[in-house]
Image (cartoon, rainbow, N blue to C red; front, side):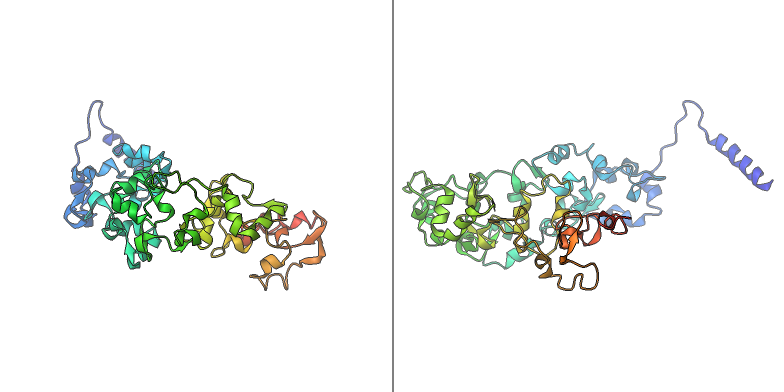
Length: 405
């Protein structure tokens, strides 16, 4: 009975709070009310670059003062919250090369939503902000030669931090970007053997950030390039010449790399039939990667493989293992270019696996294939939602594929 009386009082109080028609809520001094509890959010303590909404005292412009399904009582997700004011960022998310935080609507990964001592409300100085994700930048300052924009900690000389239509978030394509600072004059031509190469891809030979080599040349250099013997591969080298290839890229490469040519005889040869051929994976001049690869091996392989997957990164498995530790990069008779098909492929690393559990080997036959049970009978080489790269739920679904009830 007492509970019912309390409930009746609550209903009466609620009815009294209903506003008459045409009435409006009294304006609220939002900063005054909010800062009674959030005293650490005073403008002076946050930084000198202040978000407009915060400077205007419009806390409710971003936050719901009562409840929300979003962290920080945000009224919606950060993407939808920021874009109505920062409309130009909507276009950046649709660029061919958007910065991942922009594409993901994660503005607060780089910006403080209230205030900061950094321009544009960055959470830290620009170069530190970038280095938080781009960890390779830490080693650049230790190189013998550092590109001036890097030395000046000015990433935005070459990159747009939100997105562009050019790979690498570049503001302009190469060589145009480089020639904004580097004049094509007699000294430029002399540095390049007296040849006119102003239309070339500068990054094919030079590292745009830092190098231990003179002129920011990349660390690993193709022998003809290092010896300035361009005639090994090119013709028409005089000033203003075409620098045309002296033949197809494959024919030129196989003159020296004869052993690779034998892979054309195997059942599955990788890229050797394509027009780009060797140049699909290798830089013919210089590279920071071994074997003159165009980029890090995982990034290089993933540029063609698993493009149909929504989360490609999840399919780069076996951390610390190079693709070529399991796959033959030029080709072999295996349909997946695996260097071995039996347990020896995995057993080189997993030498203790299945010594006391599920048997494997030629004496154990998989009833589905009528072939020997190998690691690949139960495990995938790449991404799975189950541990140990199992393709199915190991509690039962996987086992009953062979062990019928």
